[in-house]
Image (tube, rainbow, N blue to C red):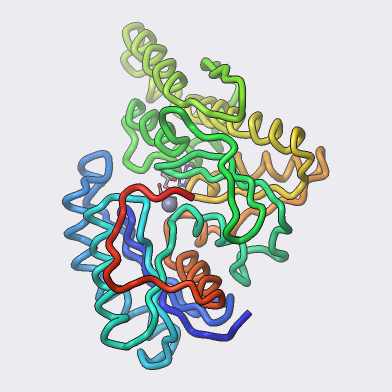
Length: 338
Ligand code: KG4
Ligand code: ZN
């Protein structure tokens, strides 16, 4: 891998992030979260875009400072072109274009979903990078899919959600429990003190490798409505058990399809990626399959799971080596296939 120094910029949702990569080693990975969305129980696109505008310059400056790099040492600029919220993507895209123009360096567009997967090739993401072909369960607030990764830029989605994403299910069910947004990490924490077998919720029955999470959300909602009529404090009195049971159901749904795909395709290299891969029960289920099914498992370091610019810089580095540059007339795109 070349030793080039590349700046990566991520602004697809509600995290403004900038990272510096040298070869595949991350020198800095800075992120500014947007606390404002908590008040609304979800990301408000207009507010996200405005916060990106405020954050982008300080975040990029911090990434350079932390990496101890001068602007003129940068060989290229990578940015998330999509998929994501258009107003958010536009901030990072416009900034990346202007900086590439002023520094006279190549601009490199990055697909956010590809980046979640290729984050596994960052030097300190794993003790060893995955070997092709591998399966990657990509689970975030916006996406849930099983991807067959044949090569760096040769990926095939073999299964995906037909409705909600797994992270969205965590967040929406958390809302029913009156938890803050994003509820995924809170449910994970509360589940540690709960009984995962306390309550049972409906599981989807889909034929292939596709997922569905709207059923479990509705099943939890009806169950809670029924119980709260009998005991107004039902949620409060059972919060840990509720969280543990919901988490167990969601992780079982995710793992069943992943196991089926691994078996059918005879693949033992299995990775997870995206925000939900921070979940402790999912990580444990992967570890169990390493022992039971002899999987070689790849679980990225926590800082490379949720949205971050390190993964954007990693993909930009791979594209830089291949001479894959983007025209300065490019624009952001909300939809962007793998
Ligand atoms: O990848 P990400 O940062 O942003 C998207 O591209 O969506 O993922 C955010 C999602 C949120 O839905 C959040 O609740 C979920 O990841 N999440 C978790 C955990 N940490 C983050 N879900 C379950 N357990 C966690 N520990
Ligand atoms: Zn993401």
